[in-house]
Amino acid sequence: MVDVPVLFDDPWTRETLLRFRDRHQDPDATDLEYAARINGFEDVQRFISALSGAPYIVTMIGFVPGLPFCYQLVSPDRQIEVPKYVRPRTDTPERAFGFGGAFAVIYPVRGAGGYQLFGLAPAPVFDLSQTLPDFADSIVFPKPGDVLRYRAIDQTEFDQVRTEVERGTFRYRIREFEFKPAEFLADPDAVIDFVEREQPAGAGSDPANVVDLGYPIGSIQVPGGDEPIVLLNDAVTGGGYATIATVISADRDIFGQAKTGDRVRFVSVDLETALAARSQRRERLERLRATLTP
Image 1 (cartoon, rainbow, N blue to C red):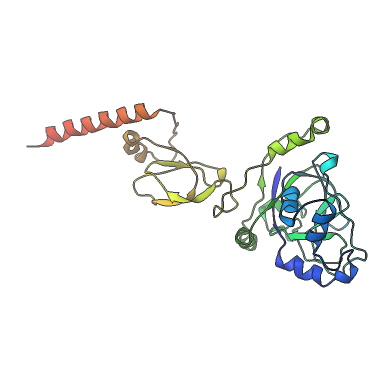
Image 2: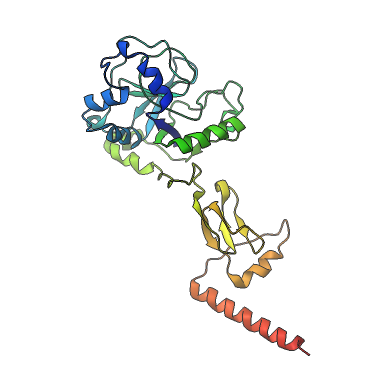
């Protein structure tokens, strides 16, 4: 499953759609307002929650390079459907999140289009220069059969992702799982269980991030979800990486003497064991101090 952030009701697609109200079914409403109303939602926010509340499967790529046609994995009675514009627009922003019929798309390039405009993705689905790591093997990132989660984000996260894209460091968050069509048809709601939790406000888009907090000495963290690190006495005192465990105080001196290439194994202990080890270490240090005192 691929996490695809989307800023819904963004200023760029809103500016575009307002220029083409004479081609729309409801000139007095935005595309989101119109779609929410005809699908029976009380307001736009509930409609956005439905759009982002269940994943989509990529059914095909086209009609321009990199445009993924995605069908939401929900039961038929919950399927969102909207008509295309009465007449197509002559302009659509690059990376616009659109919806037509029962299909969601992200426009890979700027151009004409007729799907309802709901938002803008900060990350591309098409990279001709293959600058970003996810495009190393292909100029198109999604493939037919991929499962995408269009996750609603705020302006702050949108700007953060855009910065990562411009630096060439952005990577989509991906979680492997086996999608079985027969199981989905038997229970469409079961696939929603695979949707990842949303990051708390201020934590950014990386699942290894949390809202900034103070670090205990000996913190074990896994930045980016790749390799663990241990923060010892000379480390920073706070930051935004999730702390999954802490090296007990009795072992930190030993850990600090480890050399590059040494193998380390983390063994889980309870609080009682950690406190007992700390007491034993203090006793050893007191005996050593007494021995060395003239």
